[in-house]
Length: 158
Image (cartoon, rainbow, N blue to C red; front, side):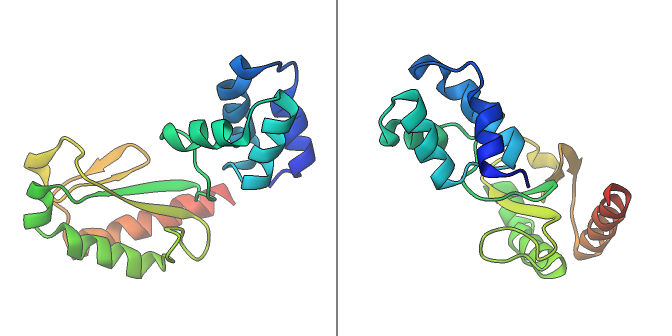
């Protein structure tokens, strides 16, 4: 992870005033992978914006995260159609196999696991989306395949 001061320097380069807030947050998250509280406070100070406004913007837009994220994002649909077809069991199995903590991050930091309410693919339920790739009609056996595929991707990125 980049040094906080270096990341702030990159993110704030040429930025002036409240109108620069969203681009600054985007650059900062690009540098750090997420938006830690101390960094948001410093952005507020340097842009002359109330900290509450900076935190409000950072929590309003779904593109921003206030906690570290894994290299891969796994979303499990828990909408009605997926739920009745076993999505809670799929989520539990993913969480177990990936060793996901309460923060939603796998122990090895490779994967962020999130619950969503609908992915718009009800006919394929239960559905899991991995980095934008849909895995439909999930079963515990497919969870094992998915986890194996994620670990293989992780090896290639090391």
